[in-house]
Length: 147
DNA sequence: GCCAACGTTGGC
DNA sequence: GCCAACGTTGGC
Image (cartoon, rainbow, N blue to C red; front, side, top):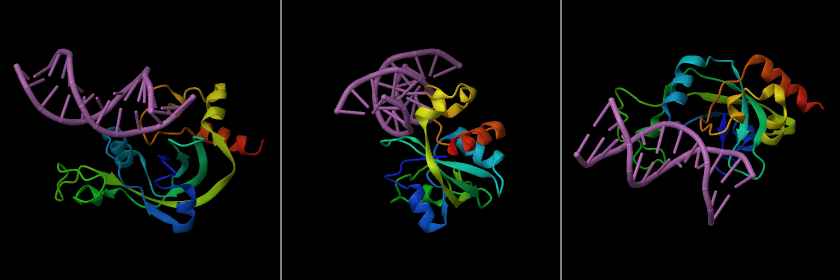
């Protein structure tokens, strides 16, 4: 799950413990939140659009999907006039801090690993802020932390 | 800051 | 329903 550290980083989450992952305004990602996420699922916290893009920490999904109320707030950055309170377009989940990685797994590193080349996050033109991680890739990435 | 890639919008 | 124009993402 990507976020810009200038906006909200792994250190912010460490301090806050849990946080609503709001601001998703992409249908593919919305569907992933709606259909594919369960409480207790693990996720990587990825820093994007920064000096060193990559995986910085681990967190867990800590809620069921629920309406992203920031879409109803005219003053919010991600206000969406088309999302109706009675039938919300956008959803979010709460995430819970687990730990920071001992070593940042950089995007550069991910790209250099042939075995991970099928991961969406390393593919050209991928713009999804949340992408699925297969179990084998998850485990392989965690093994890189210890190298 | 540049720009490729992609999603969304809206005229037709 | 097509597609040009525009906006956004995010690596570099």
